[in-house]
Image 1 (tube, rainbow, N blue to C red):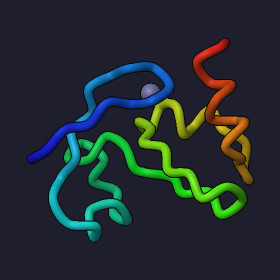
Image 2: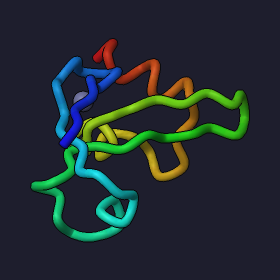
Image 3: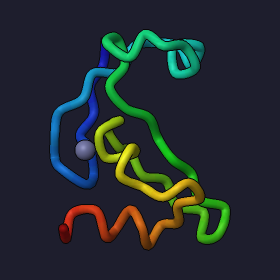
Image 4: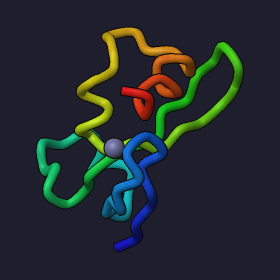
Length: 69
Ligand SMILES: [Zn+2]
């Protein structure tokens, strides 16, 4: 079990091993995921709470705006 820091809220988030867990409903094992943006090639690790606050088609600018609210 690894952990990473949400870039928006700074929470320590547990990450279960194996990408298969990201696509199940077992969110208690994995608390976030990395979003990749094709527009600028950037990657941002976010917890699911912050991902929930993003619009349906988020951009890197939306991620940057999360911690300003
Ligand atoms: Zn967060």
